[in-house]
Length: 148
Image (tube, rainbow, N blue to C red; front, side, top):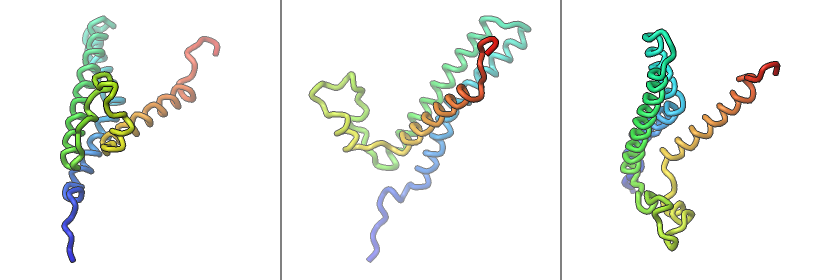
């Protein structure tokens, strides 16, 4: 007796691609966006032959725009992943400060809906990024204090 494949198996390759894209975007929020911002600032500084407020403003603006763009793309990927996996987007989308005090408890919502694969990937990338920063800061960066 043959059984029909569940809807989860139908789009497995697409979901795996979306998870890989979310990992790439999450990593680039921590690495690619700051590097792009510093590169843009360095090009402006090199063109002006001095450090100016315009080069600093370019770094801040580039960082802001690139992080917002990457976060927007990550949200779009998460929405598409939820569509493919049949994951409901009910009460989870309501921010805690907008919910009534008598509303569903967060644990109940999490138990009912769970977290998506994209959300897991983003959490893992954030944890790895924080651990990498701490390792660099404490073990490799050296002290900026004189005579230390």
